[in-house]
Image (cartoon, helix red, strand yellow):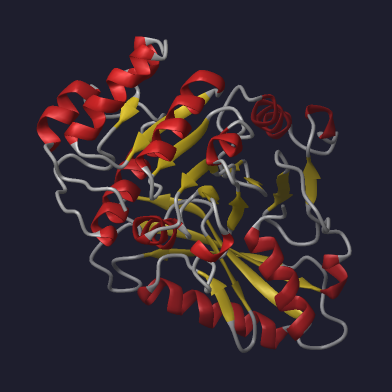
Length: 356
């Protein structure tokens, strides 16, 4: 799937003939957003954010001045400018950091060089000076002789997996991933808590697969970026999860909850497994999983109850926010097994969750 900002850029250019993409390429000290964050600015609309406030307002003005300047048919292709923004002195912001913004005007002619679809590993590479078209790399051999050696080396490292695929400014070249790999998340149950979870997660870096037994259980205003999986037996859907997927189980039935939990532990390469549960429900599940021959190593990974231990509450919205915060911390710290050993979690959490 093509990344959202590129889709927004194409739609903006189709509607208004040209647009400016504004990207943070340097961020030092305390800043609203980090390197790689961007917004798409048209003459009448914009999408995305670089942090809001005075910085974003100034960026909007600069971008629209560029659009007004190049309104004629003879407008140059691949026009770029870099502007420095000391947040304290220049904009009166108390954070006091420094941001460098990259303004790229893109029109109908430039879009001819932009791919309609993108690889999951595609990188966008270009010099920050105007005139040169965008270049895209999907394989380690896609590097070009015109690129400096350190740029070619960084692209190769990113595409080979030997370093993180992070946006970076290197020797006046800016490299960024077109696609960000979202964490696959299988959510079982379209009840009140399931609906609250999808609502809380819809704009977070997760690829959500929402599993339930009947289509009418889903809300009519189905959230974006969520795949609906209707399965008579939700445990069967678990078998199709990609390796490393995270599984959160909160169906209307304890029997279904257990079957999914058992299937994931027995048949799946999972990165996380959690069940909405009280301490009593967890004890029963652990006993049955042992009787079914599931290894202690897998059972120890069971998160039940789910979410942050210090955020108590049975309301669906509270559980959803607690789970979202827990998952974001896990992503930030590089893996699913972030928190206390589950035995301590269960002892401290008490009977704080109920089935939806």
